[in-house]
Structure formats: structure tokens, C-alpha cells
Length: 139
Length: 376
Image (tube, rainbow over all chains, first blue to last red; front, top):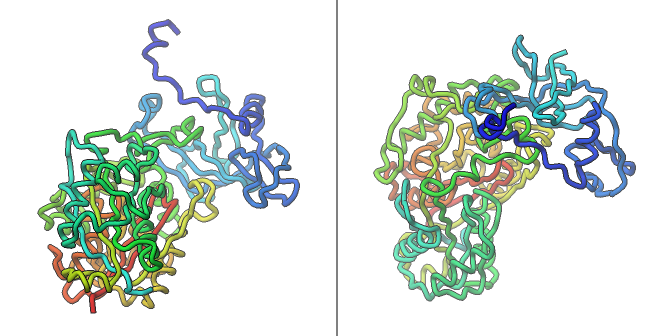
């Protein structure tokens, strides 16, 4: 990419890892989607936090998701709210529930057959401007 | 305390584009109009409660406004709850009046996203921006999709809400958008974020509104013209982000509505007219379900057949709501509720005795409910 293109290409709105989420993004970079599980009450959650939102305990551990999930809901953008995404309109954003329980925002890719509620999905980690993102495709 | 506190005055600015006007100036105009409507001198006010401007939140905004109005109120400040804050502030003021903490309260709100910044409505949702997750409409579209897929709710049923509210707004000379639409025109309205079309989305507006509250006894002493008693109020906070909710089609609006109805001693069947927060059409449908006007999942059919239009079984947003009167979030719905109870609305529901008003904020993160009745 030339310098000129760098200057005019819209910047990717990259995640901003913080104290809680740095291990999450690092694991994705290594090819694993992880979530937190409370060692006191067993609750599992995303996005990363410093306390269990169920029992408020500070003791939890990271677990690796097996990558099976289902589609909870989705939308299709026809309006670009950020210049980076304008060139890919229309695109979907979906709420996905992992088999282990935690839910996350994502995109469903390779969905030529269309989307339907509760459809089974599997994890596919894709790089976007160098950042590993957890996306999903129909099983 | 049912009926012990009244709304004694209402006021607002023009709605639409108000270039060059700051929110303090807009708030003062609305408060001046509300005080004049109540026949109250400014110096009688000893509580000033304000919803902070969505598009430009500021530290100690309530105090900045009090200084600009030359007030040192006993009770004052701002409450951050998005659009639900208006009714939450009214309910707080009512409790403060009931318990002797203040005598006469002003509750107000102003914003200028139309000629100022719309950033608050279009911004990213944290790290999920990496997936292209931006803007307030997307969250409502996510709830709408789930409702449609789970219950068979149809796009035309959302369209029926837009048709009803736009019809009412067209009859309101002070509405920002006075353009009725047909269901056919709704169907041709472009997608913003599928399943929501442009005509599912509220206006973006500059403007301000204010109400004056006092006890029923005080209103009698002061000879206030047509004070409107508050019969009930409630709140419910869903709080969680859309992706984290176990059930995308249920919100704490259920708790809020049930609390207000219980306080008022009323059931949904006793409500004559409704002002339901319509930032998006799906919000109306889900709120009507949450309040018990329709069973869960049956909000779609309920909204059809002109039921929400003037002359229908439950006229909704009789001055045009956020879709047509002004996108200014929430307080104008309370003002139209007051006009209906006074019998002075542009589109008056004949013999309306009770009105329910909903306010909410975020992506249905927050909710508050107000029930108004008749002076007796």
C-alpha cells in the first residue's frame, strides 16, 4: 500500500484492549475464542470484566470456547455510520450465543443460504486490518 | 399519594431546526412558557430538575441551568437515564413534594442535535465497532428482528404504527413533520438497518419542554387552571446491553408499567389514550405488550386495523410523537398527555379520563411510566 492510499483509506475502528480484555484479544490473536467463568458460582460470561456479574466474585478463569454457537438475532446495515464500513454495505451484525452460554456481537459470514433464528453456527477467526475477530459461519 | 401531586403547567419551544440556540436558552424558554401556563412566578419555584442534553452532556448541568434562571432551588440537579429521565424526574419531584422536600418543581429538558451534533445517536458501541456495530437504530433493529422471527411480527404491522402516528402529527400545526404516509409509502421507505426502514425511525430535533408540578392543595390555593393529577408512576431498568440480554423481546418496561398501574389502581382496559415513546416503531409495539395492552408476541396484530389511530380503541401519540411532532426525547409526550386530560388537545380523544405515558432510553435500557387523570 502506498503512503497516499494509507492517508485516504478510512481507519479500522480497532478494539481498544483494557486491563480486563487484553487476554481476550491476545487469545484471539493466537486462534482461540475465550470467555470467563467464575470459580465461585460457575457463571460464564462475555465481554471481559474484572468481577463476576452474577455473584460479584473476583476469582474467575479463562476458558476456550469450543466454537459452536447459535444465532440469536441479526440486522443488515444499509447505512454507513463509519467510513470504514461504507464500501461493504449491506453487511450484517449478529448476536450469537456460544454453546457454553456467553453471548457476543459478531458477523455471520458465508451465509449465502440466508439467516434464520437459532441456526447453528461455528466459529471462524478472521483478520481485519491485522486484528483477529471472532466471526461465525453456518454449520 | 395517588392524585396528590398535579401537573400545573406545561411549556415548550418550537420544534425542528433552531440554529444558534444553546440548551440553556432553550430550557429557559420552555420553563418560562410552563410557568406562564401555570400562572406561577419564577421565584415560587424551589425545585429544578433537568434531564441532561443527550448530545452534549455537561458536568453539574442542573446547577448551570439554575444559575442562568437565577434560582437557588432546595432540590435540584440532573439525572442521566436517557429518555426515561423525564418521567423519572417527574416521579422524583412528586415524591419530594409529597414529603415536604419542596413546594413547586420545574422539570425540563432541552437538546439541539438537529443543528448541533448527532454523534450521540451514531457512535460506536465500544469494541463491537470492529464488527460494524454503530448507531442507536441498530440496537432497535436487533430487537425487532428477534420479535419478527420469534412471533411472526410483520413489517406492515410496524408500518401501521408509523401510519397512525404520522397521521396524528399531520394534524398538529406545531409538529416538525406534517406529512402523513400510507402503508404503501411505508413499504417503499428505504432500509436504514433492516428490518427498520427510514419511516420506522424518529426525527432528530432541536427543542425543549418543561412542566410545573405542585401539590393538589397548592394548586387549589393558587387557583391553577385545569391542573392534571398524577395517578401513578413507575420505573424499570433493563440496563444490560442488547447482546447480554437473555430475552431480547422482554424489557423492564413490564416492571415499570405494572408499578404505575398498581399505584393508579388501574388496569390497561381503563386507559383511554396513550403516549408511547416512539423513537422507533418497534418500541411502541414492545411497550404496548409490556404494559399488558397486548399479550407477549401479539403486539403486531394489536397495532393493525387503525386501533392506534384517533377513533380507534387505543389512540397513541395523538400529537405525533417522536416520529412526527418532535424527536426531542420524551417530555413532549407528557405535555400531550396533559393536553388530553385538560380536553385541549388538537386531536382530542372524546371524554378521555386516563392517559398513560411511557419514556425510555438507550436501547430500551431504561424505562419510566406516568399515568395521568382528571381533576376532581
